[in-house]
Image (tube, rainbow, N blue to C red; front, side, top):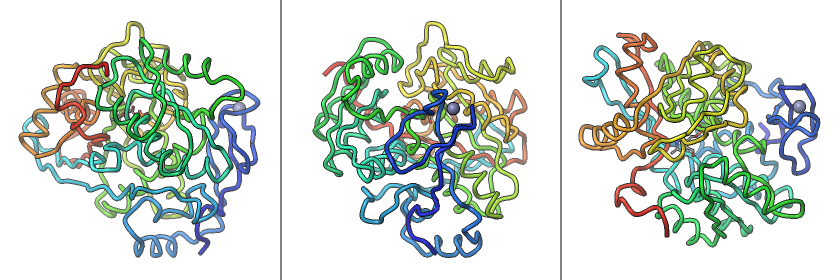
Length: 393
Ligand SMILES: Cc1ncc(COP(=O)(O)O)c(C=O)c1O
Ligand SMILES: [Zn+2]
């Protein structure tokens, strides 16, 4: 059994079929500018043996290291990410007859699932010799990059919408990152970041504009299959902003299928706020890509992504699994945050509560059905939101 990502063969663009060698830093496809995804030599891995070896390892995401892109064990930058619990919630009043479970990434380092992508991407960035990284972020990705950058000894700059919760802004600074706030959404933060950094600046760690964060997110799918085994959920309900988590889980399911470790993947269900729902709109309209959401607004900062960069890949992940999408209102999200806490003892951010908020609509729309088991993904802790701190600081 090889140890770390010796099976990584190429970075490939699904839009124009270009292939790039993975041995130097690269962002998007040099030919067409779309997302590059890692391809592994899966035929060099015996699926059953691999699954057995994985099951004996520590419960971090590095247990899947043969299918992660970091070449040397010494390159791994870790804070113990991965291995989050799947909590049974039982039957909830808003979804009669449905067996509801929740995968809770709120306890991961830096309080969100963003730790998964940043642990892998920062490890690989350092391995490839990068020393300065930047990211536009709604908050959680910035905190995660700041933490892993500090651990790796790399310089980090974070560009945040001015309305980002103050606790997240302070968090980035505490880890030693340079923080720049920008009026508007993550779209404007991204434009400001790329203009400020320019050629010779830091390396862009934006979601799906570099190939390795999605590899870390892939471990959400690996974990779900490993933890739930023969009792896989019929559907996974996921709070969707840029959609990296959906692309990552779909990639995990494809790789597990190729290894003979999965027959049929769960349906991937995208939940977005009704004030910013470009992916759900595209799903409903049958479009191949999303149109930017007009006048985007929501209380869930991570879901305020009016123009997801790789919408084609996100839509592919949902459609290929027979999934769907729905929207929730801000009051519904707020109510779900309260219910998750009071009924189930779960601290969820507004994003992480959106799947719970969506349950009644998913039942009404026939997207989930009585007798099914459904997994909600809580992507982040509610703690940074509890204090109700003002947005600046
Ligand atoms: C807590 C939380 N959930 C969900 C998302 C959306 O993530 P994705 O890019 O996977 O759609 C974000 C992004 O910032 C987030 O911070
Ligand atoms: Zn291309």
